[in-house]
Length: 140
Image 1 (tube, helix red, strand yellow):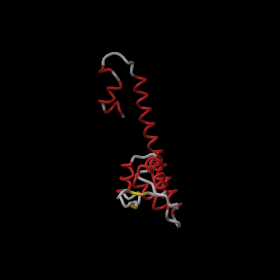
Image 2 (tube, helix red, strand yellow):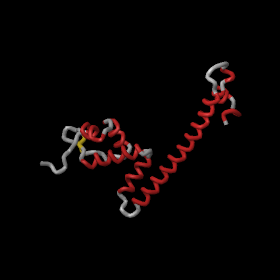
Image 3 (cartoon, one colour):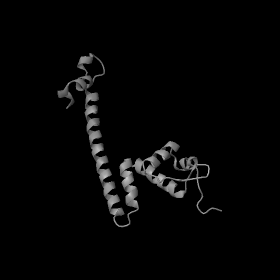
Image 4 (spheres, helix red, strand yellow):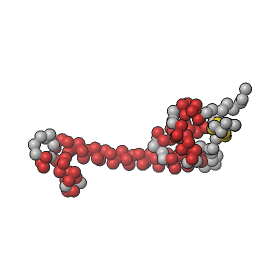
């Protein structure tokens, strides 16, 4: 029995929950190493590819870009500075998420004020929502 069972691209995709095209894309982008090929020419993957794809998928779920994921993968192999640098990257991602939340909260509060001010009837030229979209002074 083979100690390193090989998996087809379809089996890997199913286990990780990504599309086959996604796996091919990650290979082209250098996020996954080029897989071995069977005599038939089909790709052959091991459990390491499954782990790496799960890492990529989870990092994407946390909001990391593919470039940041590439850096995280490199840092995860760096025994000397990897953990410190990974923490710094995660802190940067967290700060960016907090900034985005603050911006979305500001936008939500502004929209909520406009919705509250709109009677929902009458002339469109009196609608505070429409005026805010047209008039620079009202929107700010």
